[in-house]
Image 1 (spheres, one colour):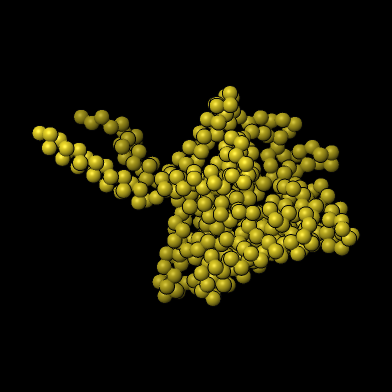
Image 2 (image 1 turned 180 degrees about the horizontal axis):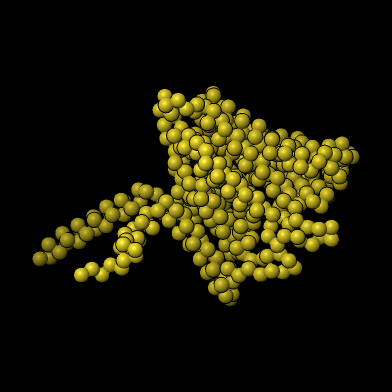
Length: 382
């Protein structure tokens, strides 16, 4: 007689084993743990445990910690998509995405307001070119930056981190050149729509959810569909697993890697549009600052191997949301922006260690050693 609970022919133990060995189990578990940290902070400050999960509608706008986390993580989610593809196909990271965000945003604002800014006035009051064209320019700049990185990696065979280091240092400087070293502001109301809410002429929100959430969700869906219904996704994994074997098989590995980096640059350009739209201008010093490191962490937290090959977009998205949730809880306990990277690094190291495939064998060996010492001690006493 067995005590296992049967679910449609599958034993309970088998079901638990299947869940715990799933690729998304640890990323989801880490996200839940970080959210529980937010709940604990609310409780310690005298609030209700459910405060973190409350969503209210105020003046036509949805508000709540979950909405804030999804909204603020939008740029990171988009950049993490590109970083996932980049890591998978080249077994390397693109550390220039933050600088490309600033560069794309600066060029876009420069193009939208070129010729309208008098000397020592850094406020764009009207568009010189159509707004949609300005957005296309930002995405195009990101694509060109990605193509440059891809050319260095795929054609010149330069190590990815070294190749992208060029734009990491030069991209933000180029952004300052286009912004004339200042913080250019855009006073046209609809410029802030993509980073905030779509509003009517009276300033009322037409959609209760921040626009950035829709853009991030759209990019996730678009990327997932492209990878699922085209051969690109399989080719990326093939090149990442074994570049040489893929070339022998007939795949143009250089072109696949090039397209991967172009896609990463496009993602950075879109994220740059959202970042500049949030503040209604371009701050070249802070736009996308350190976001490349968060994107790499999101990929790692999502269970993706930084050695290339197979990848999980959903894991990267969960990793990005986890990082933003962690940032939220650290700010809620009065951790300053300067101290934030230290605390974040400690928690991230713990999460990455928990996700390591080598951790379980090491723990089993340690427990076996302890049991062996215990049995020897009992033999000596006997």
